Amino acid sequence: MKLPLRNATLADVPAIERLIGLSARQLGLQDYSAAQIEAALLGAWGVDSELIRDETYFVGGADEELVMCGGWSRRATTFGGDAYEQRESRLLDPRSEAARIRAFFVHPRWARRGLASQLLAHCEAAARSAGFTSAELVATLPGERFYARRGYVAVERRNYALPGGQQIEFVPMRRTL
Image (cartoon, rainbow, N blue to C red; front, side, top):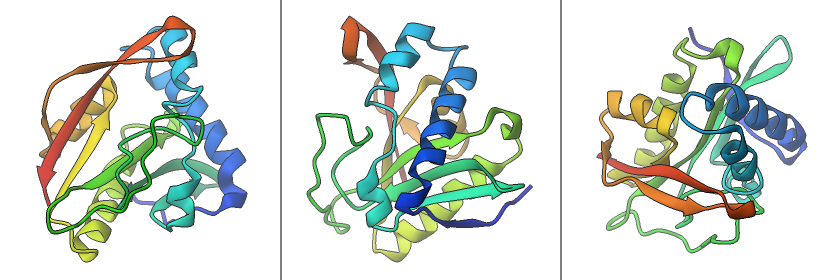
């Protein structure tokens, strides 16, 4: 199944935030506790408006509802929404650094229909067009399985501190484009 994609706009932010929360809360429970998910939604997962302004974040919908979002970046930040403190807006050098695949979320009713694959192919093609020859990302545990099937290789699992004393495990991954 394929749905039309378009560049996200700042007007989409409330709908993107709802989609991220719904996706994380329903699709993440197999791998994370409810407390971890809620803490991650305070910054580690969220809208990065810099991606929207850079026109590298995309949304797709059906029946006037957003059902997928995600993007890529030419900036150093590897994950996190606007509230995440460890952001780095420095532009990457495509000759020596990897593009970042960022913030993929799919509505639970639309999961496992190939939408994330469609979005990933779109992002990888855009990164290649910008001169990047590799991509890296920080995957959630459910995302690790998806990205591994698409050729991404895990570097090592890492624990990240979250608000409220929570910790969450993410998986840095990389592949050649």
